[in-house]
Image 1 (tube, rainbow, N blue to C red):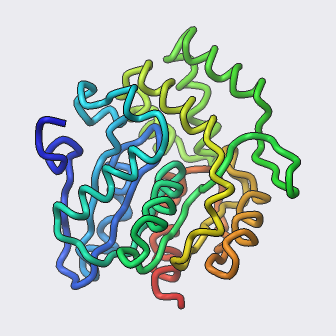
Image 2: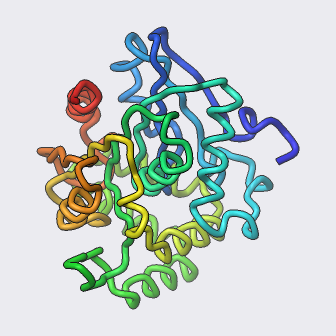
Length: 269
């Protein structure tokens, strides 16, 4: 990037607390996904918001498909942002792919993070019977999704958004659809391929930062078995907080409830 990473990825710091708290969005959204969560935290934390380079709110010229081939490149961005802001210690809330980005970042810089809160996390979306792991998808499922996105992105978004939201919250479906449509379809497809082809199960035992895995009762993208698997593989560093709500994006479908659960997770030992 030829411009400052803080400008390129639309970094904002809000709030008046003494502690830093990072909110990192998942694929298909941008930092606006946290807008209904934010007011519950700015009195207690200095909240850092940013957009992943693949988000529709970021200049697509910054997305280099030769560079962003693994999640490690996104980890570089996160750590560069924190260094640019002179952050030496923070709590981190990551949704979906950003949950795994946060875990990878904590392995590189464990002293930088006090706690990781992981919403809708999955170290591998593949269907694998190895070690009782059930990621939820077969390879043919991925190929069907990729083909649908290539054939008619608009139709795919209209079908995928309500499936991902899960709960009957039309406003959340509209919001998720808006940010999906903001993404350039080829970038959306490229990043989804990257995520779906990632298998990060092997890094879970390397995480030394306390993790809270937030799992809804029914998540199309991350089955409950994945949360249980992660808790086991984190070797005492992870606990599951079961959410009494549905869907992959509770910050859109149940923001007040999720904010309360986030406060509980942040205050837990």
